[in-house]
Image (cartoon, rainbow, N blue to C red; front, side, top):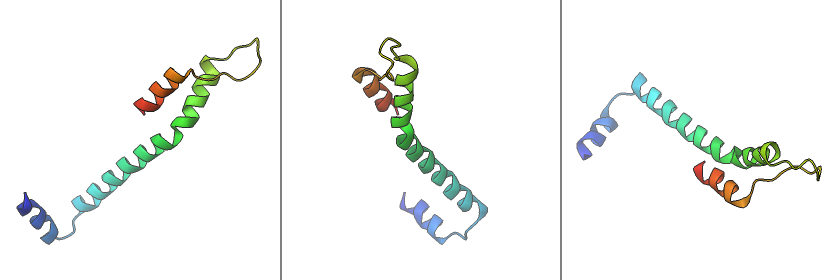
Length: 73
């Protein structure tokens, strides 16, 4: 295990290193974006699928469904 890390530390910077950094950075970005926007998505789902026309107020996801959507994210 440590031999691999030592080999990576002593290797010259190549295009592979840049590619690995970009891929890891994009993974972190998409994960953070997903966690950031899930509250907005859950509100929109409530307005779309749980709207009650008799009250005229925007709908809201039931707590169990909201927890499920948030947990899946």
